[in-house]
Image (tube, rainbow, N blue to C red):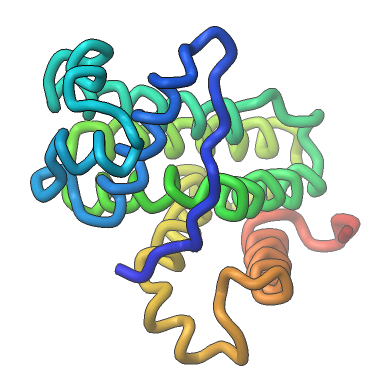
Length: 212
């Protein structure tokens, strides 16, 4: 899978810097190489610390994987589960902005969760279900406010945006071949976001709703 360009991961308030550095390094290497192929020794060397320090903070490789899983879940929830504005056609664009910001600002998190979803790992299932539930709640609110098409299937209304995002990221190597420049460039990300927003507005919202 082609990777999104990496960027430094932010530190969590109150977390020792060495823990943040080790976890961020593990996240990047797990996303690039897979958890099975990445040893604690490799992670320690890349983080510039001793294996003993990694074991001191996380005990075992399983403990480190769990810490990375928890971190990824927290980042995704913090970025995408923030209270949305009052239901309106603009909430579609707001969700799109949050997704695009996550892709740009947390590429290691995105790469890790993609692998987890595709590989069927437990954390991938948790993330997929959390995002699906989030979408169901948002589209349910839009429906309750009379903003969706009267014949809209709310189950698929919640799943379609998730499929559009995950499918695009999983198929990115092939999609890149069809674009004039890489998907991750600002122009192409905006083009994609605008296209998805238009598709959802025209296909799932009542016609005649205001556009951005």
